[in-house]
Amino acid sequence: MRQTIRKALLIFSLLLFPVTLYYFSPALIINAAFDGIVNGSFIVFLLMLILSVPFGRLFCGYICPAGGLQECAFAVNKKSPKQGWKNYIKYVIWAIWIAAVIFCYCQKGKIIGVDFLYETNSGISVSDIHSYIIYYGIVMLIFIPSILFGKRVFCHYFCWMAPFMILGTKLRKLLHLPGLHIKIKNKGACISCGKCSQNCPMGISVSENIAKGKINSCECIQCGACIDACPKKVLSYGMKEGK
Image (cartoon, rainbow, N blue to C red; front, side):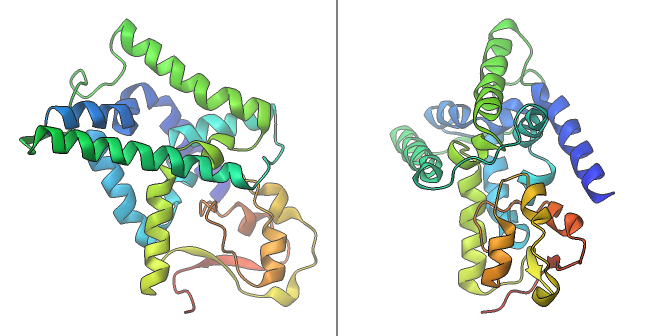
């Protein structure tokens, strides 16, 4: 039931993407910074960072329209993408973009206002031909790699939103604060069937993490698919992590 609800929420978020696109736009933050404006995507990304401290990457698992689009691609390609140095590409993209945003605000010299609906049409992102070109360009940027290379490859390699939530999660662990995570409640009951890994939408080798005694991957989106797939109920959600 939980995974049905989760996927329904992702599909609903995807259907709303023409409305919400500009609230996830890194380019629009740069445009707003040139004008000295704190815009909608700035506020959304700030909230992602703050809320990731208690909730981790729950946004990615349940609400992200890009995640919904990629999970639709599972019907074509469910192969897990290769892990390794490519996972760091998103951090390079993120760091360059953050530097550009800071530079643009410094060039303006001051913040003159907050406009959550900046450059939208009464809050709607896709409202003219130019916006549709941007919209379908972003959709193809997310969808095509997922078809070619497998499970949520955009999340792994290119997503400019993921580093905010990974940073928030690492901050929580550094400060030893409580926060949502997947915990191993009964390691001895594991029968190494591999269903947890097979059902993970991020392609994480959950069974290997269980053998090591901790689910500690930065790519975990707290979706709970591994929990629901386990026939022996080895995994569960938890809030308090050990130091």
